[in-house]
Image 1: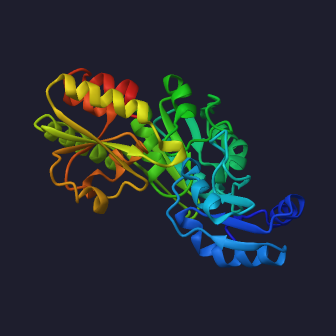
Image 2 (image 1 turned 60 degrees about the vertical axis):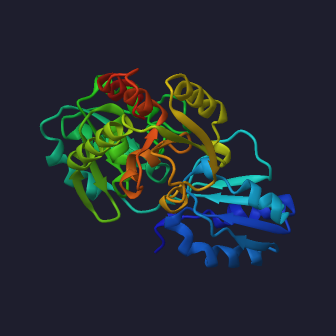
Length: 331
């Protein structure tokens, strides 16, 4: 049994409706193993499939330039909800909802939630269809439940790697959060964005656990990077080239700020911000990331020099306190 719904019949109908002859398939890393199977389905639907092998970390990371250069008629983006308003190439989104149940993992999370009464409920798009049922389980156990609907994402309770507005919108009314979904990445984001304890109900491994220790380690690493950046003299300001991560105006503001305090600052542009790319720029003491905000939080230990967000730079320069950064800016 497959873990996700790839909406194969809908994909066939979209290909027929658009009369597409060439189709680009874009998959996040965890779904790339399905590339060959999905390509065969599209080929049977009468179109030539091309599977993008480049990394894909979200709907901000559309392979639009690749699709345009290949001359495809249609792009199918799997695993995320729509983020960008404009597309260079006609694009359909297949959310790849999980088809398994989450009840067992949620039941295992209840003992970990026992010291709190007011619970915020969040998940990724793969499990938004389970939230009503999860809410009922929590209510039966004596909890009150809050599900945010902040409007920045597609569904109530949904979070994405760089947008925790739904969690933030109810953070003041809850004591802790329950995240339903796989892995630790999103749950750490919830804790960092809200400063509230977060318990994970992990349906793929049918387990539950707290994310607190890992969130604390992340914060300690961030503080260490900020302290190191205070001594830096030469800064590279990283400008992302992905459609949903290009913030040139913000980068220019940062350069102006660094120039004004006597620091050396230079803009560098890159599509994929990796340690291998940045390690070639040995003349810089510190990198300021204006692309995906999670890079500075989750992968900083992989980089040979400090990689700070724009707001972390303000802390390093003494313009923003650590407390205010934690309360308002971290995500």
